[in-house]
Length: 453
Figure 1 (spheres, rainbow, N blue to C red):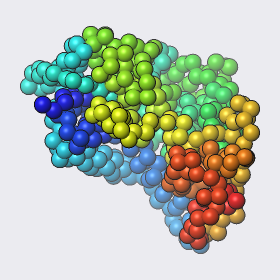
Figure 2 (cartoon, rainbow, N blue to C red):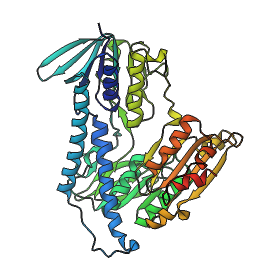
Figure 3 (cartoon, rainbow, N blue to C red):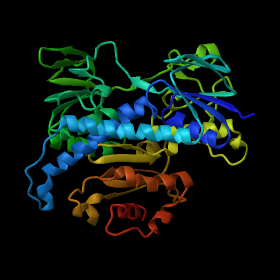
């Protein structure tokens, strides 16, 4: 009899775990109450990147004269933009559904809940179904965090999921939160021509990132006319007759046509049945015991946003794969643990920002000796050809061995270029291994070989 693996939540972690475990011979049931592919993924991540791509194209039109072109500009067609986003997310959801079906995964549309450590129920339109499980994985995702001092209405006071796109393009958007999501919204709406004010609770945007990286982005924001309220924390949002007023803890006030909350997310752990199954919690997340993301109940796993690890779709998908390997016993042979410190991440602003591994500031904070090499794109022929020489490549390496420990890239296509450094960091490559590669010329990737010299 095949191992019975029941998964609650069909986002990146759930779909990856389901298809991989099924290929390995498990009898897999995947329960999803909303959209296959994940609500946070297909209703936050993908739509935001689609809007950023559209906004970026619009912004590039406005700077076409620098490429030797004469243009009259363009405008945003909101209905067409909305149709574009729906088409992209629908296609991705259909692709995920087709992959599950091709691997023999039973997809159940409903709300899953554990009633004990080996039994899961699914409440569907046709009633309740019960499944016995040898292993269970919960990957129910997250939702936007809403503090008690604000009440979103979906019209003027928005959460991230109200903005893809909004019913009307904001004349003046006040973005609350200067982390990854917040700066992407600044990028997005400033590209569409909206006036933007960003509430920055610290003294730099992206407080968790390299100050040099944040400085490049801040310079671009200021060039676009974005207003930065540094050192200010929003404490109230009031709706007026035709706009909003955002009040900060230092007395400053930001007025706009719309306000958007970008202050994190909360895991969906309510009504999943953790208590009934005997699973221990760690604050709003589930307590995990080891690299395999097992809970205190050994055959119950968590992945994605409910695990409390890096909240990235790419990480969630890899977690799903690693859990499937463990469920099916592959960890007893050839199995590499997921190392979160070597996960690459990107921020889709303009310029893009990407990093992987050890950051320069963290190395100095630890008192660790590192070699830092930095090459600006201003010295890149391809960057000059593209009329965009902003940003740089920075590589962090061990001065004694030359092993690449981390790196940051700010500039066009940073999310693609970081893959080279991600491979290097994951596999312990040396700077010499990169420096000796013969890359295409002219190409932005040449900056990587220059930085590795």
